Image 1 (cartoon, rainbow, N blue to C red):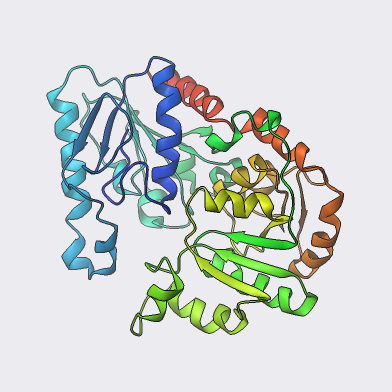
Image 2 (cartoon, rainbow, N blue to C red; image 1 turned 180 degrees about the vertical axis):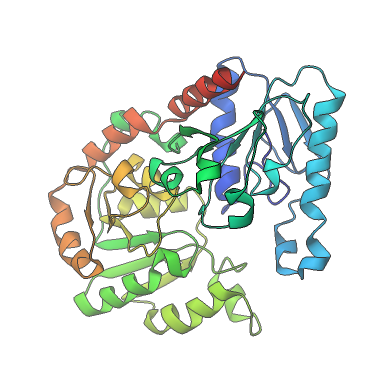
Length: 363
């Protein structure tokens, strides 16, 4: 299970792919799968063996110039190749490392399942000409994501597996939470997530909005305030498009909020808002919100129509200007319906069983 060199598994707070790996591995092991994890030395996830090059996550290196950081992923991937070649009991490699994870292990290596977690419009030269040689296969995290893949990559797809959350375990047996009078946008602050749209609508239509997620490498308002002028595009986006609306009352930015405070924040919201500008591939924030009994109100693009049952677990529209009206209507939805849907569709054991089916298919 190759999680990459960027963050430990599980991560301390933000870390999408690493959180997914941390969610997937325990139920796989419960099903009898022995897991060798390729990550960094500070990973604490219980596995059968840990392979690492770097003692700590290399995520801060991503802010350095490319010619200073371009050896990080090859060093990690070489360790994966060595581990596979030195052992005779690796049946399959499940790789989560963007782009570089499609590198070959040789014709006599084990099959590779490469999970695609990101926007497949990226890396057009790689994805548009990819040939796995009958050994490397891919899966998406939603049907919509796979449908947008270049033809060459789509030819290697074995389908999609929706994301899961430990919060969904037993969600149907928990009491629905008490709701406050605020709305939350979860996730990294970036133009595709549409925080500026949500903030503008909050001021125009008079609802309280909480933004929870990092801005570039900065995880708190204090850290961002002390930063010098940055070339990071997300920092520019926040300062130019979002910050003018952040007044600490109608709109607040909390930075990265870690569990259990994040879960309390989401459970207490009357809705999680998704004013998306891009086709969200996987939607971790969606399945977490539903598991916590909070409906999702958002733009009907990407994975959202696959995850949200309109009129039952959330409300979707194609027009951002209709979002405030949907927020007024969301009180009619029963939070228990969202929790029941999460327990039936988005538990880690369901995701693990689906991946085990794919492993057996490739083997």
